[in-house]
Amino acid sequence: SDINRAYRELHRLGIAHSVETWCDGELVGGLYGVHIGSAFFGESMFMLVSNSSKVAFHYLIEILRANEFNLLDTQFMNDNVQRYGAIEIKRAEYERRLSRALLRASEFKLPVK
Image (cartoon, rainbow, N blue to C red):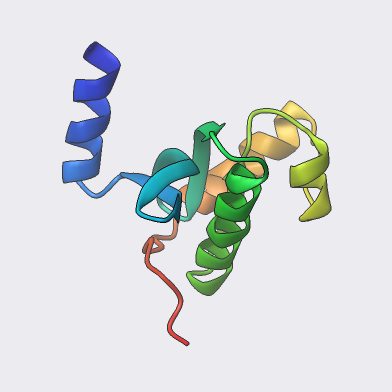
């Protein structure tokens, strides 16, 4: 599909990322999105096992915090993102935060423990 090809190319360019949840060698949940500057734009989540996408979201937050991202755009508000401190903001505030996030580059890499 066109979207599949586009995301493979974005991943090759280091812009699209996935956080995956595996159990017994099987992919059971995860999420993916695009990162530009210090902003991450969550595109989609899925789960085949209960709560597996929540685990992936938890690790996404860990990655973003460790790499000092300024903005996480989740697209939709739900209990899970609110649990991590998500807030709805007005368009003008979003644009201000986005402009700031695009000025500084962050890497998308696992935190060093």
